[in-house]
Length: 187
Ligand code: HEC
Image 1 (cartoon, rainbow, N blue to C red):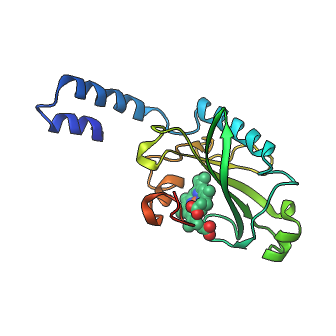
Image 2 (cartoon, rainbow, N blue to C red):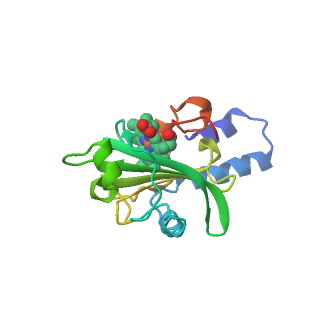
Image 3 (spheres, rainbow, N blue to C red):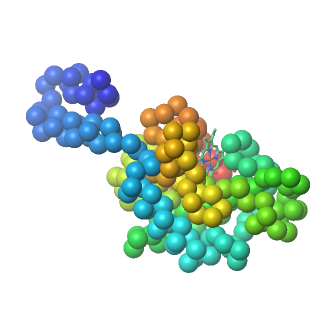
């Protein structure tokens, strides 16, 4: 029994409308929360918008490289700003993950493209997208813009991996301030 039907069963006197509503949510929650066609399409739009805004590619803006923490790269840089994707503006945090032979802050500052391993992004979607998790859309791109995948072959785009004990959401829920963001409590 999931938490919605548990709630419905527990509230014996719940009105029919309330229970119908929760039943709908429970169907919704059985869909894969990430890696589905709609999430992949949104990830493609986001990648394109990032290109147009200079948030990726060889001419991209870069933050100051700093020493990273697992599971992100050995060296990281993080930018946060706002971006319009598919006609809607939202907050975006772009974290570039660097690694490989000879990686260091200076080497990355000098030639970021050479050490780039992945681009992890949080983009704040419309209200209601994922109210349990501050409406963040999560995605992990490889340097060429293709999507990284988990061991089951699911693309890491969407509500990754909502309900699981590991993954973007599970780990970021531990960030201070309840906004799922580690680097600041601004949101
Ligand atoms: C095991 C824990 C863990 C997992 C899993 C994880 N992260 Fe993070 N993430 C962190 C930590 C810790 C930081 C802050 C580290 C830093 O910047 O040095 C961070 C930082 C970030 C940031 C910069 C904003 C912030 O919170 O400071 C983004 C964006 C991000 N992660 C995206 C992702 C995405 C997308 C995924 C899944 C594909 C993911 N993360 C998976 C721990 C995790």
